[in-house]
Amino acid sequence: MEKRYLNSINTIVSLLIFISVFVHAQRPVRAKKQRTNVEKFVLAPFADAVSPDSIRIVTYIEIPFYALQFIKKGDSFIATYQASIGISEKRGQDFEHVVWSDSIITDIYTDTRSAVKNRKHFTEFIVPTGNQYELIGELQDRDTRKKGILKKKIDYRSYDKTPSLLDPNYLLDLTGDWGFGKDKIPTRGFRVREIGEGVDVKITGFIDKGEYEVNIFLSNSTISDSLIQRFSGVGERGYFNETIFIPATKFSALKNDFRIELLQGKNKAEKRSSFTIYKPGISSYVFDIDIALKQMKYILRNDERSKLNVRSKEDKEELFYSLWKERDPTPQTERNELMEEYYERVSYVNEHFDGWQPGWETDRGMIYILFGPPDEIQRTNSSTSNSSLWNDGTNLNSLYQIWSYYTISKQFVFRDQNGFGDYRLNTPFFGAGL
Image (tube, rainbow, N blue to C red; front, side, top):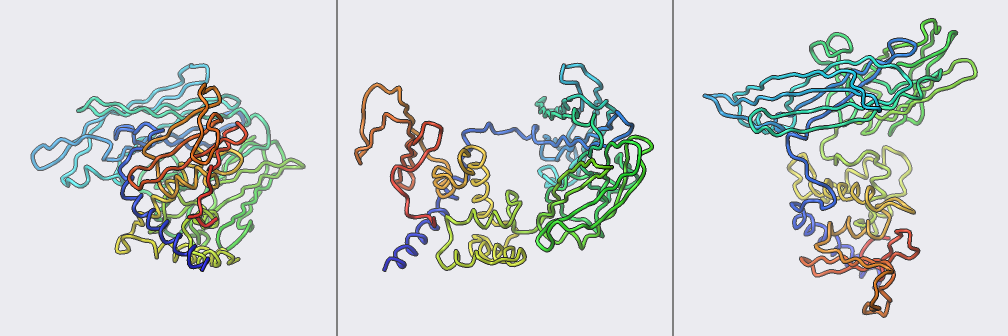
C-alpha cells in the first residue's frame, strides 16, 4: 500500500513538472537582468608564452548574426556594426585598442536570426607576466545605435614563478589565418560539434634552464587519469610551446578531462582542462553524467532509482539517455525541452542557493527544481516587531520565506534554522524521491 502511494505521488510530481515547465517557461528569471541581443556576443582570449617574461593574448570577438538588426535592401539583408577589443592593466592604464567597422550581407532571411552563423575578428596583445589585466569587448549596431559591452579579467601574476603552465589551447580546422598557424582556430572546448580526425592541443608554459618533461592525462567515460601523451625538452629559452595531436577516438565521451603535468627537477606544475563534445538530446547545462544522474533524484520512480547502482561510466551514460528519452515531450526533435528546463533550474539553484551543501540538494533548490520560480516570495526576519504564528504554531519571527505558486495552488514555508541562510522546509515535502 505504501509503495503504491509513493509511486502515485511521484507520478503526480512528474506531471507537475511538465505543467510547471510550460507555465513558467516564458517567465524571466527575476534575479538576473535579461541581456539584449547586441550584448550576446563572445569575447574569448587565448594565451601562450612568447618570451621568458611575456605572454601573447590572442583575443577573438565572435558576433552571432542574431545579435544585429538586419535591414532589407533589394533582395538582400544587411547589418552594419562596429566592434572593438581593448586591454588595460588593473590600474586602468590602456595598452591597446583595436576597432573594426564592417557589414554582414545575406540573401537568406533565416540567417539574420541565426545563433550559429557569425562573424569573427581577432587581435593579439603582448603583455608582461606578473600583472592583472582586463579585456573589454564592445559591439555597436550602427542602425539601432544599441551597444553591448563585455569585460574579462585576466590574472598573470603567478607566471613569474617557474615552472608554470598556461591553459592549453585546443585547435580545430578552419580555413584562414586565425593567429595559431594556417587553417587552425582555437576553441574553448565547450560543446564542440565537429572535431574531424582529432584535435591539436598547444601546450605552453615557463621553465628554467635544464631538462623538463610534460605528461598529458585523460579521464572520461572509458578511461581514468590515463597517460595519453608525453614529450620532453631542454629549457634554453625560458619558455616552451609544443603542439600535440590527439585523435578523435580519444574523445569518446560527453566530457573529457585533461590533466597536464610539467616536471622540471624536483618542481612540478599542473593544469586541468575540460573538452566537451556536443551530443544531440543532451542539455547544455549537463557537463558530468554521473552528477546529472544524481540530480534526477527528485523525479525518479522507485524502480528507476534502483538502477543508479550501475558502476561503469558507460552504463551510467546509457542509463542517463534512457531515463530522459522516456521523459522527452518531443521525441521527434533533437532537443529535449524538459531536460533543458530541468538542468537550467539545477544550474540556477546551484548559483543562488548554495551554502552548507550544493544548491540542488537544499530544500529551496528542490522546490525550485520541481516547480520553477515562485509567483511570490514573502520574507521576514528577527527584527519584525509583531509576533505571528504559522498554521502549525511555528513562530515566524525567525528568518523565514514563504513561496507561493498561485497557478498550481501550492505554498511552501522555509525557515532559516541557524541564521546563516540554511533554509529548511517547515513541513517536509513527501513528493520527491529523497
